[in-house]
Length: 439
Image 1 (tube, rainbow, N blue to C red):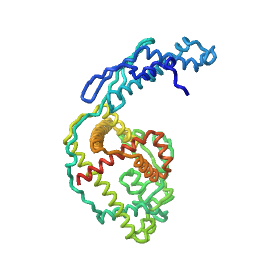
Image 2: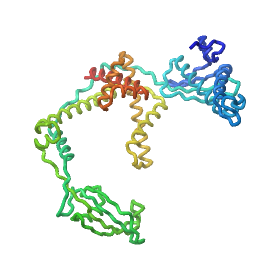
Image 3: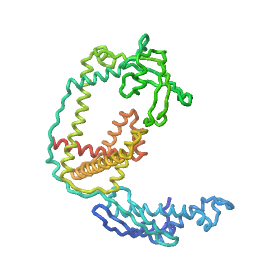
Image 4: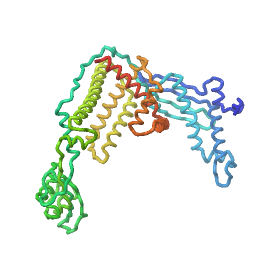
């Protein structure tokens, strides 16, 4: 395809082709880590882009009384005025901002805030952009930081604790006959309830409980004592007017409970047979050795994290800088959303939510500061991540998630996550470097 001739080329591209700037900008320093840029896109550039967009609408517009592409330009322009304006702004503004940031060598901490877009047909377009920048700071002598070597030992009682957890998870539940319910039993119970004032029955419920648990309803627990499978028991409860459950407060309720099924937990003995039942172990000693190895790896990772934390604390004590408020708020919101989504259904009081927000902000500030420190060390040391290292990391993640390498790489490319993988590997290199220096 031949390039458009200069006469037919849109004015913005024509100006760029000539090596000129197609907009005017004025950079103002508004703080140590903030800038404001005032933009003006000349009327001739705006008009050229506007005409091009209007022509696109004319070709595609569906207006009653006219065939597609045959509606008069003025009618199309009036009918789709707001859509054309939006298309014009989205065509010119982001491109101008991007080019201006690049020309001024600015690396925003968050997306620039575009404000006060002003434009009337036939005139220049003006707007302002606020840019929050990452702070500049001087690194201390990070190579001189030393921290104590943390102990790396697996105690026998730790192995025993894991064995007991495996023992509990391997328990069998055996049906019980000929005796009543005892603490530790698992019971499936049918509960029927009737409001004695209205004489109305409430919906029958089936619930499963572990007898003897402190969290059980004490009234229900006390009326299940010695009850056998198939037996029923009726009892009455007078609820106080200030009961926590408003549906029960002030009511007198008659309950009838029946045990539908009763099972007791049978815990296996810790032995060679128990070890063999868990997998590829010939005896208990092999199982213990495997547990020791896994605990040791876990402790190594914990020690690595604690050692890094000590190093970062020493670095932070020697560095002082302020973070952009917008960056803190953005990171805080990410953390807060993650916590709330992992506790869906849980009700938070206003005080609890405020405390959670404060903790999210505290952690957000620390995470951002730590990241900036590590990135600056990476820059100073000249650390880089090669394409082969990125691919090897994706292969490792693919094996972990039982996906093919090409499938996962394509997913990361599609979601724009390759740069995130590269950044993660870069920070890992810095961490490894700091740990080697500090120990």
